[in-house]
Image 1 (cartoon, each protein chain N blue to C red):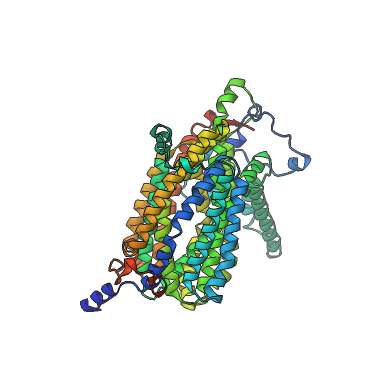
Image 2 (image 1 turned 90 degrees about the vertical axis):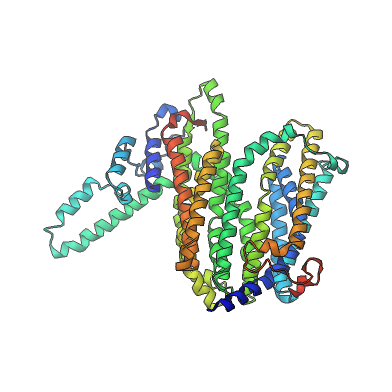
Length: 344
Length: 241
């Protein structure tokens, strides 16, 4: 390829831009309702009305599911129909949350001008810094990966194939995300009752080691089951794309994503334990190291292996996180299991 | 390594003195007939793991029976071979069954885990399932560039959104504290302050995303920083690309 054609290509930009630009402009309108829903969901979490929040989220997701085929195919908006469907669902969710907050007298319009006192939010902001570092690192690497994937080919086959593999990974990871979140809840509740147990000298306890080991066992076992299940249905998964070239490009990345499920479970449970245990620094260091590993491998693996190379980088990222999680578990739980115990 | 850790903590668990287990339910008659996990001291496990880097050595510790079966293999008659092979298969399946039973105990710890995790998995499922269905319908258009463009735009949107993921943690904690103490005034303050902060962020980020779309997409797509003519002021562009 000549220098001239390189320049032409650069000026013309990625062909995916034609879709991405207007799509993002539409999505920009959903930032406000999404944030309102975010606060609404958090408020219901704080008032322990999680089932109600889940019902609202389920309802609005169902609305998207109904609107998607209608707007994309029936009304012929194409891919923008998807953005419009999301927009509709997000405005509905925000309206429902606003009504709920107003009805419960939790939201007062005249109080909307009052800024929070620094003293009340400072400890929470400090506490969430580690989580923010994690979130920032995760988003940064996803952006870096997306940039590499979008540049693999001009026809958009690699991004479409990546979307398919990522979807398989995320759907398989639902249970492990939940196990990770359960670990985040169970470990601190266990640790919180440690002092009480010490005071009452209650012998009816099960060690945190037992709890975490059981979670790990379940995670690894279910990871294998999910992998086998997804592997069995791999042809069906690939058929969700009608294009043969996308299916071909997605085959090996999807296989890598499937084989990572058991390790993903260990990572989720390990990080859940870190968070529950208050090991935020350890987690942040692990994530930063894993991100560095990801970004470094991203420099050369995709050049040789294409989209499969990106998924190899993802495997490296997961492996480093797993090593970090296991090191934490070995250091904190195996070396001093007697120090941590919980009432049944 | 993972298998080692799981076995390691399992053995630690098996070594917990009975008095520490306190009111653990007595094993049922059915449980008594279950194969019990082999209790291996932690130090022994550590030594075994150190001896070999291969995970399989810690995974399958040969029993006395299997040694005997292997020793007997050398001088066996041709017709006895299928029977021995059958025995080996049944031994393998017994080991597999034992491993599964080691995980699936369904006692109070397992019940506690699943009581917490199953409702959460429903929450976790909503977004990925919705996204999968969305991708399915967009895939049906048969246009890879549409999928690529949507993926790029969604990545930028989600990254911008998740930069503020600390907000629910702070809001939920503040609301939870004030709600638990029955202080409506304080709960209102927490909700209103979070709402104000969120709206400020959302309006700024939304406007930046609308007017500086090209710059936002420039983080992913090459050539995106070259703005289209009248991009920032043209609503028609939404449907014209």
